[in-house]
Amino acid sequence: MNSLKKVSPTTKSDRPMLLPFVADGPVYTPGRMSFEGKKRVFKLSSNESPIGVSLKVVEAIKRTAAEQHLYPEADGGPLAYAIGEKYSLDPARILVGPGSDQIINWIVRSWLTIGDEAVYSNHGFQTYRIRTVTAGASAIAAPESAMKTDIAAILDSITDRTKVVFIANPNNPTGTYLTRDEVIELRSRIRPNILLVMDEAYYDYVDRPDYCSTIELVDDFGENTIVTRTFSKYFGMAGMRAGWAYVPSWTMGALSRVRGPFTVSKIALEAAIACLDDTEYQKASLAHNQKWLPWLLNAIRSLGYETTESVANFVLMKIPGGTEAAVEFDKNLRDLGFIGRLAHQNNLPDWLRLTIGSEQAMVGLAAALKKLNE
Ligand SMILES: Cc1ncc(COP(=O)(O)O)c(C=O)c1O
Image (cartoon, rainbow, N blue to C red; front, side, top):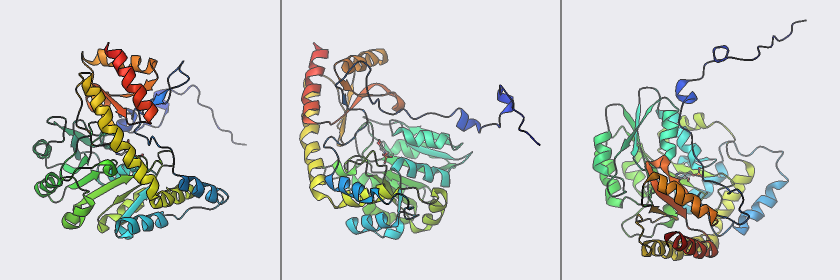
């Protein structure tokens, strides 16, 4: 009888060689979940909803619980349909996925490989760089000006090899945004055959008259712009993993092939459909942020710290004294029970991002910051 020959211990040369850009590629750093030795901590490191989960989502999860022996719809069709209804969009152009991070991955897989370039903003969301580099392509960081995406710098960073431009609007971790006119300018000045990906994970929080979703522009600039959205923040469903993108129809076939079937679970599909319907939850989510974002910005600024002009559900503050001082500050804040997120993955190692949390978290955080400032 044949038997498997055990090769032990394996050395590197015995192993099938990994793609080098995967083996040595950059790694996503998630927000810390907890802090050793502290029983009561406020996690302000992942931009999660501070108002808990929608009761309609809980009901949908309970309702679907007994159906888990069945596959979900392969393409998440019912959710695409519900999104289409809510935003008056063509469901055939809505790609749903287990979070927008994964959708960004599918976009990278569909367009970028060795020799290609993607341009993103220097302090942009870390996923663009990580996904691009682990596909073997190059991620080019365009400098920002005043902590904001700089259109001229994006244009300057584009080469013949550029195939995709990624912009988070508003951006994470700076919280700053491009106006409608700026997005129009950007789209009209980059080569038509470059895919512009507008990541609108924080779209629902923005309350500025000169801001608008690029979804409204996709039809005008249609064929080469994609907009991504998530259920993780404003809709309070980070744990469920659901997101979507509005895409040109000619891209749907390719993106669906890369996606594969059944990527959004039955529970997540039902939960996302339920939360789209829960306008009370959405109102509460917005009202909470509209109250506490300016409150926290003001509290931090009144202590003399520099912040960005965030319009999202987090603030970004500069810690004086450089990187080491920032690491120390972050640790001291955790000792007081508040977990923030240093933005070193975004080329801002001395800036700390703090999510808008519950009232108790915000009042406590302001007091903790005051204490650290004494
Ligand atoms: C700008 C931006 N885009 C996308 C995502 C990914 O969100 P998710 O994968 O939870 O949909 C995040 C999450 O923090 C984000 O900040």
